[in-house]
Length: 93
Image 1 (cartoon, rainbow, N blue to C red):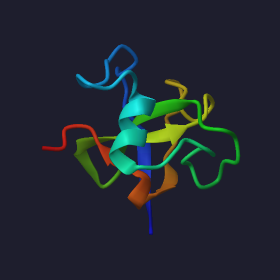
Image 2: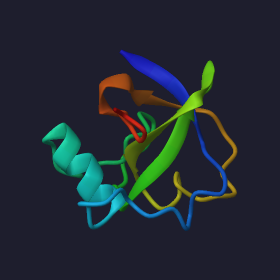
Image 3: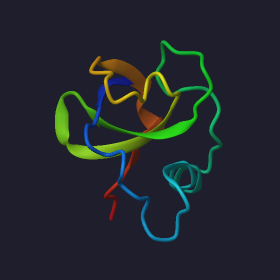
């Protein structure tokens, strides 16, 4: 199942939680998957970043998803679809 997301602004200097070397490391360890292609369904580029996004319909929660440099660009204000199961909540308890 897919869901529409947008990039969360102002997260470029946010460090990964304690115990993780990067947002990529956080996502891979939490999901048990490895980075591959960009998480944006319409993109076929390789994922380079753990991108901070939020669901368009619910802006309160922040998620990490593998994104290419173009999709993770802070100037990208477009909505795009991602596979919902790829989203990893940042503040998961």
